[in-house]
Image 1 (cartoon, rainbow, N blue to C red):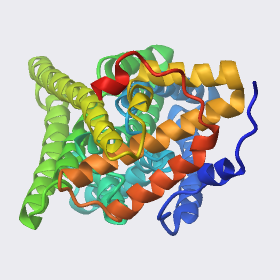
Image 2: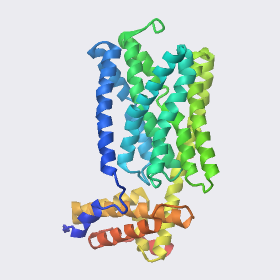
Image 3: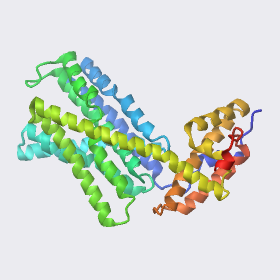
Image 4: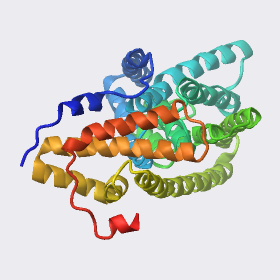
Length: 392
């Protein structure tokens, strides 16, 4: 049996409650920034490497770590996915806007104060690059508070900004390595490969890690009611981002082999701790989702038998597969959209029940419930799991 999608579904799929003004303009602006970034990156590679072969190698090596980095943050973002437009904007900001801001400031400081290269790398670079990257998270929070509403959100956006920044920066480093210099005795393909091993293999998470300190701080700040606590957390996070970045660069400039190894191992431990906390926080999201959905079911807003098909990824996939195999592709789309709305509604409901302030929280909750009700005539879930109703 193939269902014909209810006309209400088309409207529900496109409509977003309390849609923010200026969203289209924002995407157009960042689309332009992205195009400028691509052109600028090509120019940077060609000028820096000196020929097409060097530029091609620079781009290729800069691209190699991206899938691993993207998958890592995509995995963290699966349960409560952030808007794609903001994730795209985060990457573009890091690769274009933050790079431009930092570069302009560094050129001005070096020309005005005649700072040597080691001091530029160890002190000026962290003081200009980290605020330029962190500005995106600050502006995002100021524009749309509901986008960043916790630890994981801040970490994810900070990581994406860091990935964008590192991508463009790596193109420059690889292009310079291709040409070689007095300090870099190896040039050509060997020079690029050597630099890639250091930056792309052994330290691909460096920039995301630096900025993550600020991302975590702003993610925690949004849960605090005290303005003093918010400001203190934001300033502490920025200081930590700058400090981590400065420590890494200084180890390369002044630390020698032993200093670099010590800092590298220290930052590896920090990265491991952040990753562990992030994984634990992600696991906690499952429990939060199930708890919230059970409260929603008790209020009669959804049927208890729906809860497994709205919470656990295994059952969510099984529900979509069942809908497509028995009722067609339109049924799969309805189930997927219903799951997405239910997930967002459940997390919002939990935040409201926990006493956290959310913009238009009550109105948005009821608006999403209305969307779910509009989808129900075409909703095709598998049979209820055994003991599901009694359990919840």
